[in-house]
Image 1 (tube, protein in one colour):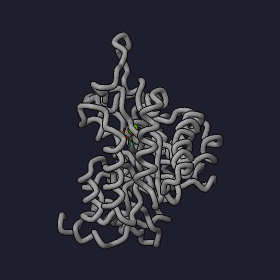
Image 2 (cartoon, protein in one colour; image 1 turned 135 degrees about the vertical axis):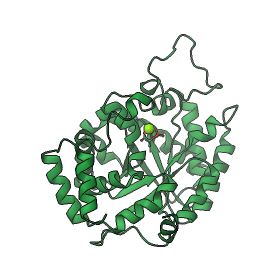
Image 3 (cartoon, helix red, strand yellow; image 1 turned 180 degrees about the vertical axis):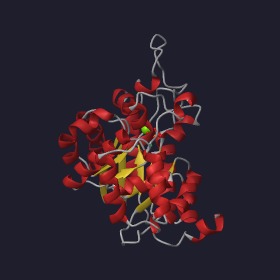
Image 4 (cartoon, protein in one colour; image 1 turned 135 degrees about the horizontal axis):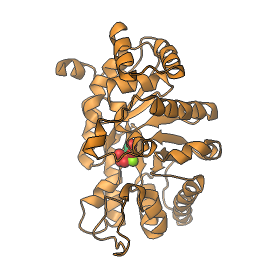
Amino acid sequence: RRAAFAAMKPLPPVTKDDHRVTVMVNAGLRDDVAALELTGADGIGLFRTEFQFLVSATMPARERQQRLYRDVLDSAGDRPVVFRTVDIGGDKALPYLDHDEDEQEENPAMGWRALRLALDRGGLMKAQARALIEAAAGRTLNVMFPMVSEPWEFDEAKAIFEAQRAWLAARGKKLPIDVRYGAMLEVPALAEVLDILLPKLDFLSIGTNDLTQFLFAADRAHPKLAVRYDWLSPAILRFVARVAKACSAAGVPVAVCGEMGGRPLEAMALIGIGIDRLSITPAAVGPIKAMVRSLDRGAITATMAELLAAPPADMRAALGGWAGDHGV
Ligand code: PEP
Ligand code: MG
């Protein structure tokens, strides 16, 4: 099987009925970029910038951040990279970020983390914005914000970047050719205001790890809950289908960047509900490409519409059976 997946490398992820799926990888370290060459992926759909912060004993200086981002862009070459601004805080607390002692969080996943923290600590966000903009001089910069919960948070984050861009422009610095802004959809409330949010965005990325934990109110790291709720549940699939439909109507590209997209059966279901951009763990690229190349998108789309209109008791079994019957 390993040899079969390796043979997939030069082959594009195209369905049997000729629909091109974009398969990108998730990354967070300098060395992760090698996965692009190794897998033949289309780009980096999620670069988790907090890794550099988490492995540092002190706040990474702007110059150090910039060096990392530039190295990543250099190694990625023509392939796009989506940088996610820091998702720190919560359970990823940093020793050098002064948390208030009297603010012990009972629910860190729902606490002061990600964009919430970054907007409150404007200096941190400004430094990262400048590092990213300078690193992407002469190229396109794709940046996305984690844990956006209300549209104004996206506006505020984008404004910080635009202010840095204007500041650098005023000093005659070389700028990115273009800066494209996206939001992560991982807080369910955001799905209720897509009409307000989508016109602001260049792209959306659904983080199914956090989204699932918040939709089911089930800690994503809890071992007893890990087997209890299934990504192939009607609730998750209907939710993602609705978001995909709204994005398509608004002309906003939408991807899934959570672990769900790296599993063949789940990815098959996602393609059937209108997702055609996936960002996944590098090891999953071969298996996902193989699945895509054996799939008829028209057929899975019709099947998903039926299954979601009247969900079977065991969606996983139904989809597994369908895949078996259709040579997927
Ligand atoms: C997610 O929540 O699905 C996601 C991709 O982000 P992270 O796993 O880094 O929280
Ligand atoms: Mg997340």
